[in-house]
Image (cartoon, rainbow over all chains, first blue to last red; front, side, top):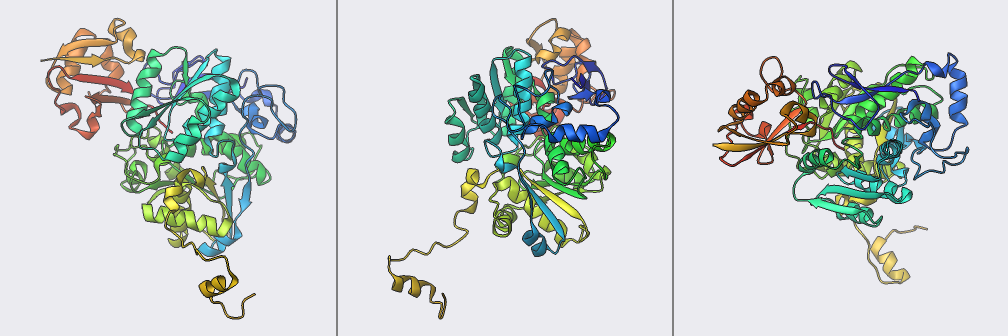
Length: 421
Length: 91
């Protein structure tokens, strides 16, 4: 496989490709290191191989940390292994662009994944690597979407699973997780309490693969496939700007890593997009650090309707800050009211109904447009990470239902549109 | 005042293989100093050159992140629990 080692992001110490996530010298996070030289010097050949691959993330297995390459017996149409993720639509959003005075906006709709969020990508990679390493139980600390994805992937493979969530999570996310027959553990506390418990548990349960704890280096790599897809869908180029939500900061930084890998290998043309991160004002440790010019984040206690982004202690925050500055982007925050408006704006101009995290992203796009930060000639992609049906409370009471008697006259009386047809 | 310190698996090799160690101290700083007096190797793992906590080390007193309290000056009650864990990004 192209992966060569796990490498500490801080002190660069290297470790074997096992279930480690933290450097034993300095406690820094470990990341997968690669040697892509086996791909050869001809990017056109690599592009052709990608295009001939299955219609899911395994078409990018040359860039993912799996020993066996693309898992299962795959054909162009399918990958016969687990619950494949990816190959979600990239939708040109001209009405949204016009509304905001922009020229070219695209929506990467990752709600179109099997469990309706981008988490299916990261869980696919983590699960396959966990199976290669011999684990038989999957687990995670989740704000909801990850729990959905882990429970579903475990079912597809017949693995045991335990998902840990904050007890105040949206009911839709709990129901959509329990249905898979997983062990749902609702922890009395916020996400950061759940994460602390799972970090402790992962040290005590040797046979468990916590996808976002001890499998984290592999899990995080799955987010790169969003960048590969966007690039491939734009004809192996890069967009000028990405607007993406930030919770832990992992998705945001790995999207950039995906683009940078392809630019370096000559697979994509262009340059690194300006990377704009989006947070909710009720949980904005990274946006606040950005605004204050800090390079580390001060943890916060989350209080926002965007529960999937409610991570008060984002460990990849420093890297997200560095990326936003280096790429010429930025990190913004929006209020809960702006989040609700963002959900409505995306739905009413594109037909895509997103959860609160997508409302955060859309609202930040609007804010950037209103501030005049986006050149009208730019090609902008917003990353919509999850599905509106999972956070229905956010749109309750935002519109009127016309209840009438089943008669023509009642309809006419209600709408009273003279001469309508 | 004796308090219990929970050691993460990643550091147990530097703590004689122990997962829990009882030491004396009334705030986090004193507790860590007492811990380092027993297992000196732990200090460079947990602290940076200036004696502060490393960026990716989280310390909790009674389940609360000390950065929400008074940092290294956070009081630790008698019989309390101090937990050391690596920071992990969530999501």
